[in-house]
Length: 433
Image 1 (tube, rainbow, N blue to C red):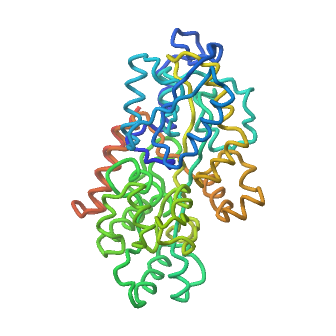
Image 2: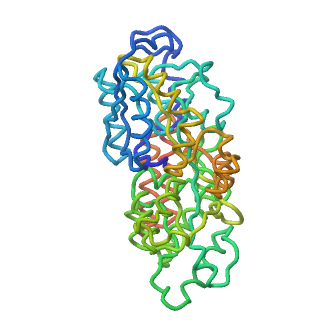
Image 3: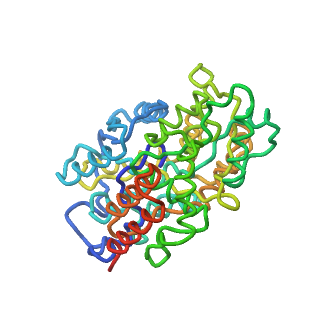
């Protein structure tokens, strides 16, 4: 989820561009252990990650430990909040602590950690990167050098209640915002459906809102920053995107509770049957398909591309990469464990257990997997067409400004025009060279 977990307060992948101008060559010799030649030492290691909600991560670790009794891996679970996860990893790095060996980094953190020499450069020739999704591989590089390996990718998807649409005489998922609103009206007009929420995403004031805002602007044909890094939220497209979210809350099509939703909040609402449409990441598929009674929508939902203003929308690119701390011991063990965890067999195991998006491209075309996960073609398309979050030098400040503007407009504290005017001004200051 942005990746599986939310990606709050992250420093963007494209921080690469940032640090490019401000730091020395990452290929130079240094004492931090930042080079692939420093991948030495074998023995026990610790793996810092967000919560293992599926249990499959521990299953794979147990499989490794059974075969490597003298090189055991221990999972260190960090807080559920991605902000808190990043803070813990940054504190570990700034203290040059040996506590964490492998770091499970959101894709938007990788370049920041590489630029600060908190993680080591990895040998590209030891990974069959041609067999991975190209957008996922790009998130693991800094200045064309590999500093992590993509383990999970992510693209936003539209989950929808197929049973309710069918009952309303609707035969296909909506491709546009207008179609989605019309479908909602038809479903809610049926007996017993008046209290359903039409649509929700991740609308709390955190990194998930940056993703959802960016998707709305991109799905209206716009961008937050252009290819040269200049702000472009003073456009009609940006206004259309933010208006879609703000008007949805004002009209009630987006339930008011959604302004507090992060990934798991929205997932639970959809699983409990409270929503007709829901934007979230691939991991939700397995959760919503549960047969243990935890999901009220098992067998009743389907997945489609995100809708947009005049056609299919554009997802934000998410995912997670595994990197090796520059300050850890037993880096050779860490490298081998990453190879194990990103192998064809392990990624397939993870897909089967969690429905998270694999980074190995051929898994999306495996007939047996496609039969079990019929949304794989849609997901692959979403990832290949996904757009990274705004590329900016001061990403933390940029994402905070985006969240403030979007949250203010969505909650009626400012008009869409005023929010975007203020955001354009702030972004111009933050991206000035």
